[in-house]
Length: 307
Image (cartoon, rainbow, N blue to C red; front, top):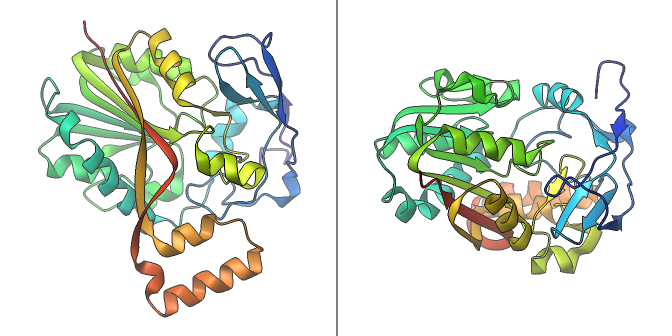
């Protein structure tokens, strides 16, 4: 997926404690680069059930990939990733704005909102509908930006998150949905986030919980074990990381997602030919478009900058 078509992997330490002293092997790698395509680094794809070598830091309760691609290689891969999940992105945006309904009432104001990993900007539209000004999204992939609605695309900054592009204390709300799993250094991102928030501003993230029942039942066949995911959190590791980065009033709890039935079918561990046939049939008879709420092992973390 890089310029010479060979993805070089580099060793990593636990991204929370910066050590490998308390780490043990959790999953051996089954990554085969020749099986990747333009959707391998896209959101809500059909799972390839490939993952990097995953270690468990027993001190932080964090799963992390080591070795893993460098930040430069990932930037290249994400920039060229495909996008065909506009319907699912729209569903997710309504789920997230509903989850934030009470949180939004506690913000300092509605002037300044940043969504890191915004995709086609569906969530930005939900924020505008609720009266937010100065709404900005960050998105590394070109395809979802090209799919954004005409009035939303100017709000999206292409490329990786660079905090130097923004003034300190300029946002009341910063969000990052299903994104912290993908970044090389999540603590660095969170340290930048707390700097960019106004006093009393809130950060909200949604991520996979590798300790959830669904992940434990499905084991290595769970779609959360994916070549895109450089780390996977639990309630413990997410809370610990946010505390370490200086956030207060931290709340982390499981959440339910609502997607079309055909999306949930896409996530099931079944043979690809059977999966595609089942999804096609479900769409043909319209059942596949039925919106279905389901607890898929995701968690929401909400925290505040006090000073």
